[in-house]
Image 1: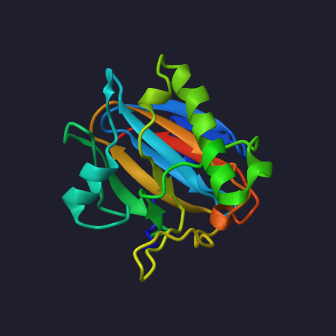
Image 2: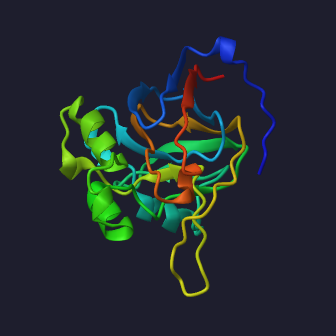
Length: 211
């Protein structure tokens, strides 16, 4: 689904470009709007959300999918926490392909999927570990994440496939915070499957005050 872009980046209170393969985190206050832009297209953006004043409450893929009865994230999706509370609402989506089932790549998963020669390649889980540590968390706090712009169809046999992304340069997803949240992003460094077009690229995050 391609939404009409009505926001001026010049009016954003925060604007940052996350380099290819890098992590990022930032707080989004209730009522503020977070936009994630796929600058060059076909770039997966692994994302986690935590309640800002209590990190033990965090994004729940299971609760979110069960509540909306749909396998993917898109415009109108209510992002729910492990406490069943509404964290964010997806208010705009120009791409229409966002996964929350395939999880984040890790060194261990790379080894299993692609061979032992990939064991020491950078991965999203390591990005998450670096970023959550800045907020006093550790690997036990990393849960199932959203993969914005990642194309993961369900095959006829029920297996998940990771295929070429459909996002184009400038595609974006926009979320309104329904509580104060910490957003943690890994700009996916994966080069062994087509989730990034085999070439990781930058993404941009902007935050606006609520209307």
